[in-house]
Image (cartoon, rainbow, N blue to C red):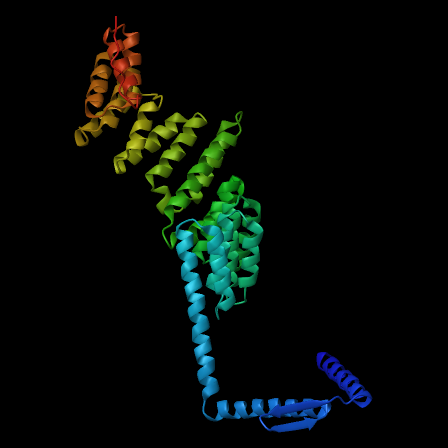
Length: 404
Protein backbone atom coordinates (compact mmCIF):
# COMPACT_ATOMS: atom_id res chain seq x y z
CA UNK A 1 0.00 0.00 0.00
CA UNK A 2 2.81 2.41 0.94
CA UNK A 3 4.68 1.60 -2.29
CA UNK A 4 1.55 2.26 -4.36
CA UNK A 5 1.02 5.61 -2.64
CA UNK A 6 4.68 6.50 -3.23
CA UNK A 7 4.40 5.72 -6.96
CA UNK A 8 1.23 7.78 -7.23
CA UNK A 9 2.92 10.67 -5.40
CA UNK A 10 5.92 10.72 -7.73
CA UNK A 11 3.68 10.42 -10.78
CA UNK A 12 1.67 13.42 -9.61
CA UNK A 13 4.85 15.36 -8.87
CA UNK A 14 6.28 14.48 -12.27
CA UNK A 15 3.03 15.47 -13.96
CA UNK A 16 2.99 18.77 -12.08
CA UNK A 17 6.56 19.64 -13.02
CA UNK A 18 5.91 18.57 -16.66
CA UNK A 19 2.94 20.92 -16.88
CA UNK A 20 5.01 23.77 -15.41
CA UNK A 21 7.84 23.16 -17.87
CA UNK A 22 5.44 23.14 -20.83
CA UNK A 23 3.99 26.44 -19.66
CA UNK A 24 7.46 27.96 -19.14
CA UNK A 25 10.61 25.86 -19.72
CA UNK A 26 12.80 28.35 -17.83
CA UNK A 27 16.38 29.33 -18.63
CA UNK A 28 19.75 28.33 -17.05
CA UNK A 29 23.09 29.99 -17.84
CA UNK A 30 26.37 28.54 -16.50
CA UNK A 31 29.41 30.76 -17.08
CA UNK A 32 33.02 29.95 -16.17
CA UNK A 33 35.93 32.14 -17.24
CA UNK A 34 35.43 32.71 -21.01
CA UNK A 35 33.01 29.82 -21.50
CA UNK A 36 29.28 29.61 -20.94
CA UNK A 37 26.55 27.03 -21.32
CA UNK A 38 22.91 27.80 -21.96
CA UNK A 39 20.06 25.32 -21.50
CA UNK A 40 16.49 25.12 -20.41
CA UNK A 41 15.64 24.60 -16.73
CA UNK A 42 14.05 21.23 -17.47
CA UNK A 43 17.21 19.95 -19.16
CA UNK A 44 19.36 21.25 -16.29
CA UNK A 45 17.22 19.39 -13.71
CA UNK A 46 17.36 16.20 -15.78
CA UNK A 47 21.16 16.43 -16.05
CA UNK A 48 21.46 17.07 -12.29
CA UNK A 49 19.30 14.04 -11.46
CA UNK A 50 21.27 11.91 -13.93
CA UNK A 51 24.62 13.03 -12.50
CA UNK A 52 23.58 12.40 -8.90
CA UNK A 53 22.20 8.97 -9.81
CA UNK A 54 25.34 7.95 -11.70
CA UNK A 55 27.49 9.19 -8.80
CA UNK A 56 25.49 7.14 -6.32
CA UNK A 57 25.72 4.05 -8.52
CA UNK A 58 29.45 4.55 -8.96
CA UNK A 59 29.98 4.97 -5.19
CA UNK A 60 27.99 1.79 -4.53
CA UNK A 61 30.17 -0.11 -7.02
CA UNK A 62 33.40 1.18 -5.50
CA UNK A 63 32.29 0.40 -1.94
CA UNK A 64 31.17 -3.07 -2.96
CA UNK A 65 34.26 -3.97 -5.04
CA UNK A 66 36.86 -2.92 -2.47
CA UNK A 67 34.98 -4.03 0.68
CA UNK A 68 34.72 -0.48 1.90
CA UNK A 69 31.06 -0.92 2.77
CA UNK A 70 31.81 -3.72 5.25
CA UNK A 71 34.65 -1.73 6.76
CA UNK A 72 32.49 1.36 7.07
CA UNK A 73 29.65 -0.65 8.65
CA UNK A 74 32.03 -2.28 11.11
CA UNK A 75 33.55 1.06 12.11
CA UNK A 76 30.15 2.66 12.58
CA UNK A 77 28.98 -0.33 14.65
CA UNK A 78 32.05 -0.21 16.89
CA UNK A 79 31.66 3.53 17.38
CA UNK A 80 27.98 3.09 18.25
CA UNK A 81 28.82 0.29 20.71
CA UNK A 82 31.53 2.44 22.33
CA UNK A 83 29.12 5.34 22.77
CA UNK A 84 26.51 2.99 24.26
CA UNK A 85 29.01 1.54 26.74
CA UNK A 86 30.30 4.99 27.66
CA UNK A 87 26.75 6.18 28.40
CA UNK A 88 26.08 3.02 30.44
CA UNK A 89 29.27 3.50 32.48
CA UNK A 90 28.45 7.14 33.15
CA UNK A 91 24.96 6.15 34.24
CA UNK A 92 26.33 3.58 36.71
CA UNK A 93 28.71 6.17 38.18
CA UNK A 94 25.84 8.62 38.57
CA UNK A 95 23.74 5.92 40.25
CA UNK A 96 26.56 5.39 42.74
CA UNK A 97 26.35 9.07 43.71
CA UNK A 98 22.52 8.96 43.92
CA UNK A 99 22.14 11.27 40.91
CA UNK A 100 19.26 9.17 39.64
CA UNK A 101 17.79 11.72 37.22
CA UNK A 102 20.96 12.13 35.16
CA UNK A 103 21.68 8.42 35.46
CA UNK A 104 18.30 7.61 33.94
CA UNK A 105 19.07 9.87 30.95
CA UNK A 106 22.42 8.14 30.43
CA UNK A 107 20.82 4.70 30.55
CA UNK A 108 18.10 5.77 28.09
CA UNK A 109 20.77 7.07 25.70
CA UNK A 110 22.73 3.83 26.04
CA UNK A 111 19.60 1.81 25.28
CA UNK A 112 19.02 3.80 22.06
CA UNK A 113 22.59 3.20 20.87
CA UNK A 114 23.19 -0.37 22.06
CA UNK A 115 22.62 -3.46 19.96
CA UNK A 116 21.31 -5.21 23.06
CA UNK A 117 19.40 -2.59 25.05
CA UNK A 118 18.30 -4.99 27.78
CA UNK A 119 20.94 -4.09 30.45
CA UNK A 120 20.49 -0.36 29.87
CA UNK A 121 16.70 -0.56 30.16
CA UNK A 122 16.98 -2.52 33.42
CA UNK A 123 19.32 0.11 34.84
CA UNK A 124 16.98 2.88 33.66
CA UNK A 125 14.14 1.08 35.43
CA UNK A 126 16.09 1.09 38.69
CA UNK A 127 16.96 4.76 38.29
CA UNK A 128 13.32 5.66 37.68
CA UNK A 129 12.24 3.56 40.64
CA UNK A 130 14.71 5.40 42.87
CA UNK A 131 12.90 8.61 41.89
CA UNK A 132 9.53 6.98 42.70
CA UNK A 133 8.62 7.31 39.01
CA UNK A 134 6.94 3.90 38.92
CA UNK A 135 5.18 4.38 35.59
CA UNK A 136 8.45 5.27 33.84
CA UNK A 137 10.07 2.24 35.45
CA UNK A 138 7.27 0.05 34.09
CA UNK A 139 7.65 1.65 30.64
CA UNK A 140 11.34 0.69 30.56
CA UNK A 141 10.46 -2.90 31.44
CA UNK A 142 7.94 -3.01 28.59
CA UNK A 143 10.60 -1.73 26.17
CA UNK A 144 13.12 -4.30 27.40
CA UNK A 145 10.82 -7.34 27.34
CA UNK A 146 11.35 -10.04 24.71
CA UNK A 147 10.45 -13.70 24.61
CA UNK A 148 14.03 -14.60 25.60
CA UNK A 149 14.15 -12.48 28.77
CA UNK A 150 10.51 -12.63 29.87
CA UNK A 151 11.29 -14.41 33.17
CA UNK A 152 13.93 -11.83 34.10
CA UNK A 153 11.59 -8.95 33.29
CA UNK A 154 8.75 -10.48 35.29
CA UNK A 155 11.03 -10.99 38.29
CA UNK A 156 12.25 -7.39 38.02
CA UNK A 157 8.64 -6.21 37.81
CA UNK A 158 7.76 -8.26 40.91
CA UNK A 159 10.69 -6.74 42.83
CA UNK A 160 9.58 -3.28 41.69
CA UNK A 161 6.09 -3.91 43.06
CA UNK A 162 7.44 -5.37 46.29
CA UNK A 163 9.68 -2.35 46.89
CA UNK A 164 6.83 0.05 46.15
CA UNK A 165 4.37 -1.70 48.48
CA UNK A 166 2.19 -3.22 45.72
CA UNK A 167 2.25 -6.60 47.42
CA UNK A 168 -1.01 -7.95 46.00
CA UNK A 169 0.17 -7.31 42.44
CA UNK A 170 3.53 -8.92 43.23
CA UNK A 171 1.83 -12.01 44.66
CA UNK A 172 -0.38 -12.35 41.58
CA UNK A 173 2.50 -12.32 39.11
CA UNK A 174 4.74 -14.52 41.27
CA UNK A 175 2.02 -17.15 41.65
CA UNK A 176 1.81 -17.41 37.87
CA UNK A 177 5.59 -17.71 37.58
CA UNK A 178 5.77 -20.30 40.36
CA UNK A 179 3.03 -22.39 38.75
CA UNK A 180 5.12 -22.59 35.56
CA UNK A 181 8.50 -23.17 37.23
CA UNK A 182 8.50 -24.58 40.76
CA UNK A 183 12.21 -25.37 40.67
CA UNK A 184 13.28 -21.73 40.41
CA UNK A 185 14.36 -20.67 43.94
CA UNK A 186 14.28 -16.93 43.18
CA UNK A 187 10.58 -17.12 42.29
CA UNK A 188 9.81 -19.12 45.44
CA UNK A 189 11.78 -16.71 47.63
CA UNK A 190 10.08 -13.61 46.22
CA UNK A 191 6.64 -15.23 46.50
CA UNK A 192 7.26 -16.07 50.15
CA UNK A 193 8.52 -12.53 50.83
CA UNK A 194 5.42 -11.03 49.24
CA UNK A 195 3.07 -13.29 51.21
CA UNK A 196 4.85 -12.42 54.46
CA UNK A 197 4.43 -8.71 53.63
CA UNK A 198 0.71 -9.34 53.15
CA UNK A 199 0.62 -11.45 56.32
CA UNK A 200 -1.41 -14.09 54.48
CA UNK A 201 -0.51 -16.74 57.03
CA UNK A 202 -3.08 -19.33 56.00
CA UNK A 203 -1.93 -19.13 52.40
CA UNK A 204 1.68 -19.28 53.56
CA UNK A 205 0.95 -22.41 55.58
CA UNK A 206 -0.67 -24.03 52.55
CA UNK A 207 2.27 -23.21 50.26
CA UNK A 208 5.15 -23.80 52.67
CA UNK A 209 5.46 -27.57 52.02
CA UNK A 210 6.09 -26.81 48.32
CA UNK A 211 8.14 -23.66 48.84
CA UNK A 212 10.38 -25.32 51.41
CA UNK A 213 11.35 -28.03 48.90
CA UNK A 214 12.40 -25.39 46.38
CA UNK A 215 14.24 -23.18 48.86
CA UNK A 216 15.92 -26.04 50.69
CA UNK A 217 18.00 -26.73 47.57
CA UNK A 218 19.78 -23.39 47.94
CA UNK A 219 19.73 -23.32 51.77
CA UNK A 220 17.62 -20.17 52.10
CA UNK A 221 16.83 -21.06 55.69
CA UNK A 222 16.45 -17.55 57.18
CA UNK A 223 13.33 -16.73 55.16
CA UNK A 224 11.85 -20.18 55.73
CA UNK A 225 12.53 -19.91 59.46
CA UNK A 226 10.77 -16.55 59.61
CA UNK A 227 7.77 -17.92 57.72
CA UNK A 228 7.46 -20.99 59.96
CA UNK A 229 8.04 -19.04 63.19
CA UNK A 230 5.48 -16.35 62.39
CA UNK A 231 2.97 -18.95 61.20
CA UNK A 232 3.28 -20.75 64.53
CA UNK A 233 2.67 -17.49 66.40
CA UNK A 234 -0.31 -16.72 64.17
CA UNK A 235 -1.85 -20.12 64.87
CA UNK A 236 -1.56 -19.55 68.61
CA UNK A 237 -2.96 -16.00 68.42
CA UNK A 238 -5.93 -16.88 66.23
CA UNK A 239 -6.74 -20.23 67.81
CA UNK A 240 -9.98 -21.04 69.53
CA UNK A 241 -9.80 -19.52 73.01
CA UNK A 242 -12.55 -21.83 74.23
CA UNK A 243 -11.40 -25.10 72.68
CA UNK A 244 -7.68 -24.89 73.34
CA UNK A 245 -7.27 -28.59 72.62
CA UNK A 246 -8.35 -27.96 69.02
CA UNK A 247 -5.78 -25.16 68.74
CA UNK A 248 -3.09 -27.46 70.13
CA UNK A 249 -4.04 -30.06 67.51
CA UNK A 250 -3.69 -27.47 64.75
CA UNK A 251 -0.25 -26.56 66.08
CA UNK A 252 0.79 -30.21 66.22
CA UNK A 253 -0.53 -30.91 62.72
CA UNK A 254 1.30 -27.92 61.30
CA UNK A 255 4.48 -28.88 63.17
CA UNK A 256 4.30 -32.33 61.59
CA UNK A 257 4.42 -30.76 58.10
CA UNK A 258 7.71 -28.97 58.80
CA UNK A 259 10.79 -30.34 57.03
CA UNK A 260 13.22 -32.21 59.27
CA UNK A 261 15.95 -29.57 59.03
CA UNK A 262 13.44 -26.90 60.15
CA UNK A 263 12.14 -29.05 63.03
CA UNK A 264 15.70 -29.41 64.29
CA UNK A 265 16.31 -25.67 64.24
CA UNK A 266 16.40 -24.40 67.82
CA UNK A 267 14.96 -20.98 66.95
CA UNK A 268 11.93 -22.64 65.36
CA UNK A 269 11.58 -24.97 68.34
CA UNK A 270 11.62 -21.86 70.55
CA UNK A 271 8.75 -20.34 68.53
CA UNK A 272 6.79 -23.60 68.69
CA UNK A 273 7.26 -23.82 72.44
CA UNK A 274 6.14 -20.19 72.87
CA UNK A 275 3.02 -20.93 70.80
CA UNK A 276 2.20 -23.98 72.97
CA UNK A 277 2.75 -21.91 76.12
CA UNK A 278 0.52 -19.12 74.77
CA UNK A 279 -2.46 -21.47 74.60
CA UNK A 280 -1.83 -22.82 78.08
CA UNK A 281 -0.08 -26.18 77.61
CA UNK A 282 3.07 -25.49 79.60
CA UNK A 283 3.73 -29.11 80.55
CA UNK A 284 3.96 -30.13 76.91
CA UNK A 285 6.22 -27.14 76.26
CA UNK A 286 8.41 -28.08 79.24
CA UNK A 287 9.18 -31.50 77.81
CA UNK A 288 9.86 -30.11 74.35
CA UNK A 289 12.21 -27.42 75.68
CA UNK A 290 14.00 -29.74 78.10
CA UNK A 291 14.68 -32.42 75.49
CA UNK A 292 15.86 -29.84 72.97
CA UNK A 293 18.30 -28.28 75.45
CA UNK A 294 19.68 -31.71 76.32
CA UNK A 295 20.30 -32.43 72.65
CA UNK A 296 21.75 -29.02 71.73
CA UNK A 297 22.44 -26.00 73.91
CA UNK A 298 20.42 -22.89 73.10
CA UNK A 299 20.34 -19.78 75.31
CA UNK A 300 16.86 -18.79 74.15
CA UNK A 301 15.42 -22.16 75.17
CA UNK A 302 17.27 -22.08 78.49
CA UNK A 303 15.80 -18.66 79.26
CA UNK A 304 12.33 -19.88 78.23
CA UNK A 305 12.68 -22.90 80.55
CA UNK A 306 13.01 -20.55 83.49
CA UNK A 307 9.82 -18.70 82.51
CA UNK A 308 7.65 -21.82 82.51
CA UNK A 309 5.32 -22.64 85.38
CA UNK A 310 6.50 -26.15 86.25
CA UNK A 311 4.16 -28.74 87.69
CA UNK A 312 7.17 -30.43 89.33
CA UNK A 313 9.58 -27.55 90.00
CA UNK A 314 11.95 -29.69 92.09
CA UNK A 315 12.50 -32.06 89.18
CA UNK A 316 12.95 -29.18 86.76
CA UNK A 317 15.50 -27.60 89.09
CA UNK A 318 17.46 -30.82 89.14
CA UNK A 319 17.55 -30.91 85.33
CA UNK A 320 18.91 -27.37 85.31
CA UNK A 321 21.54 -28.27 87.93
CA UNK A 322 22.68 -31.12 85.68
CA UNK A 323 23.12 -28.60 82.83
CA UNK A 324 25.14 -26.37 85.16
CA UNK A 325 27.84 -29.06 85.36
CA UNK A 326 28.47 -28.64 81.63
CA UNK A 327 27.82 -24.88 81.46
CA UNK A 328 28.99 -23.39 84.78
CA UNK A 329 29.69 -19.95 83.28
CA UNK A 330 26.34 -19.43 81.56
CA UNK A 331 24.61 -16.27 82.89
CA UNK A 332 21.35 -17.32 81.20
CA UNK A 333 21.36 -20.69 82.93
CA UNK A 334 22.08 -19.01 86.28
CA UNK A 335 19.10 -16.70 85.70
CA UNK A 336 16.94 -19.76 84.97
CA UNK A 337 18.26 -21.50 88.10
CA UNK A 338 17.32 -18.44 90.13
CA UNK A 339 13.78 -18.52 88.78
CA UNK A 340 13.45 -22.26 89.33
CA UNK A 341 14.72 -21.79 92.89
CA UNK A 342 11.98 -19.18 93.41
CA UNK A 343 9.38 -21.69 92.20
CA UNK A 344 10.79 -24.08 94.80
CA UNK A 345 10.71 -21.26 97.40
CA UNK A 346 14.45 -21.49 97.91
CA UNK A 347 14.99 -17.77 98.37
CA UNK A 348 18.62 -17.74 99.43
CA UNK A 349 19.62 -20.02 96.56
CA UNK A 350 17.71 -17.81 94.12
CA UNK A 351 19.59 -14.73 95.43
CA UNK A 352 22.91 -16.50 94.96
CA UNK A 353 22.12 -17.56 91.40
CA UNK A 354 20.99 -14.05 90.42
CA UNK A 355 24.15 -12.55 91.90
CA UNK A 356 26.35 -15.05 90.04
CA UNK A 357 24.51 -14.31 86.79
CA UNK A 358 25.01 -10.55 87.24
CA UNK A 359 28.70 -11.11 87.97
CA UNK A 360 29.07 -12.78 84.57
CA UNK A 361 26.77 -10.45 82.64
CA UNK A 362 25.04 -7.22 83.63
CA UNK A 363 21.60 -7.97 82.24
CA UNK A 364 18.60 -5.67 82.82
CA UNK A 365 16.15 -8.58 83.10
CA UNK A 366 18.30 -10.29 85.71
CA UNK A 367 18.49 -7.03 87.67
CA UNK A 368 14.69 -6.72 87.54
CA UNK A 369 14.20 -10.28 88.74
CA UNK A 370 16.75 -9.86 91.52
CA UNK A 371 15.30 -6.55 92.74
CA UNK A 372 11.79 -8.02 92.79
CA UNK A 373 12.98 -10.85 95.02
CA UNK A 374 14.92 -8.54 97.34
CA UNK A 375 11.94 -6.20 97.73
CA UNK A 376 9.66 -9.05 98.78
CA UNK A 377 12.32 -10.18 101.23
CA UNK A 378 12.58 -6.62 102.58
CA UNK A 379 16.27 -6.75 101.83
CA UNK A 380 17.94 -3.28 102.09
CA UNK A 381 20.17 -4.12 99.13
CA UNK A 382 17.13 -3.88 96.81
CA UNK A 383 17.62 -0.14 96.29
CA UNK A 384 21.29 -0.62 95.42
CA UNK A 385 20.55 -3.25 92.77
CA UNK A 386 17.61 -1.23 91.47
CA UNK A 387 19.90 1.72 90.76
CA UNK A 388 22.50 -0.58 89.22
CA UNK A 389 19.85 -2.08 86.96
CA UNK A 390 18.55 1.33 85.92
CA UNK A 391 22.09 2.38 85.05
CA UNK A 392 22.11 -0.38 82.46
CA UNK A 393 19.33 1.47 80.64
CA UNK A 394 21.11 4.85 80.69
CA UNK A 395 23.04 5.51 77.49
CA UNK A 396 25.07 8.41 78.95
CA UNK A 397 26.63 8.77 82.40
CA UNK A 398 24.63 10.98 84.78
CA UNK A 399 26.03 14.51 85.24
CA UNK A 400 27.98 15.32 88.37
CA UNK A 401 25.39 17.22 90.42
CA UNK A 402 25.17 18.13 94.13
CA UNK A 403 23.22 15.62 96.19
CA UNK A 404 21.69 15.98 99.71
